[in-house]
Image (cartoon, rainbow, N blue to C red):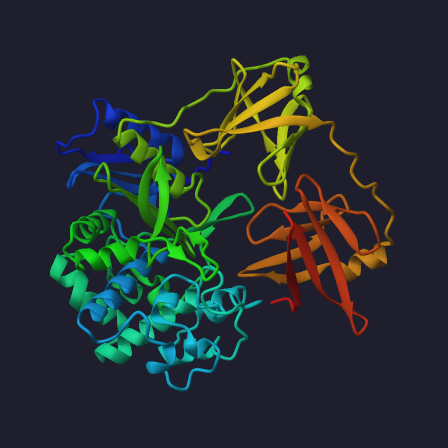
Length: 555
């Protein structure tokens, strides 16, 4: 759907500056095309920057920073950084470690003596790498969907929101992304430095480095270049939900421009923020107590761009989505900031594609080719994976795949036995082995090393639907809390019961018993539970993982 906002599209919807750098020939034209295909010109959009060998190779803005005034996005536009804030918090902590003012092995109780056990024993390192087990306040059932995010907090009052909640697991045994951990790190900075966490960030990092736009989000009203934040509401652009910028705290309260984030990245990865050995700790993958490793480090995470290591972080906050990554072997940095929490294209995917273009190793691109249904029919069936299975089936003449625990995804034919997915880097080829059975070779997220899936047989029949009285279905309808996101069970326009997670589309659910339902088009099951004669919660079983969603009162 094309969205119109009254006035004509701005003639300068795309703005750029391209100083000389070592990106390949034709990079600017390809980057322009990618940006134009990723974000609209007449709606909320994005700012991007690409740095190569420490120089700006490309910077651009597309779309509107404010849809009412028609102010365009430029590389100087300021956005909420969201969880990109975490690397600044981590850097201050590590500077304090270098100065001998604290240790990564210090327990939380050293700084907050009255914090209850077992969370009190979590170390600074475990707060940094999300292995503390402490309850994340944004994951408390009903918290994010209440009016609390719009209410001002202090450090102490915010900690009070989660300090008495049971820990989710013993510290060090699991990784679970945790905003409470970074609030506590902010509190530690305040205890050790004697300053508000954001003042310490300013004094130690942003002012010395000349990062004039990176500051606390409470300053937003006085920032002339600040973008307005938007969301998608019933298919239309709407102002984002309000949030008081004290609430994201040291986990996500900073704002800034892509240009200043690029300067920060140059300083951080260039050894200007912490010592070399400390930096290596900051980017090292985390080892859990059982020896397994996870990609997250200290305020940064490890990834991959065309087989090359990348280091970065993204952010999501009401009205904004951000992404950033650094490819050390190529000395390439990319940031993409969007002023919508439901942008047309993911900033993460756009950033990865830009990085691949900058290192002259782009991801394959495909266009739809019409293929007769008869040529697709032999591919239908079940395929074995290293973990789980993948079903391949036809619907309305189109090919779909569904991985264990996943949703139905249209596999778009590109000709010559190749298929791709919309808004994804994943693609695959389909062929036959020596025995004539179908074999699919998948390149997950555009990886160069493929995953081969062999055909194992026909698709098993799904459980037959059963009749459930309307009165029973009405008892299940209502509001639930699924981790940090609200989950709504309601009746669709056709009278069928549906589930809707956060801002995602509603999905019909099909009863297979009086309490159990399968999601239509998703490999998942929902079971409703009662306590004391009332529906208390539901359980989502997806990909072998079961998670409960507690019923909550409507707001």
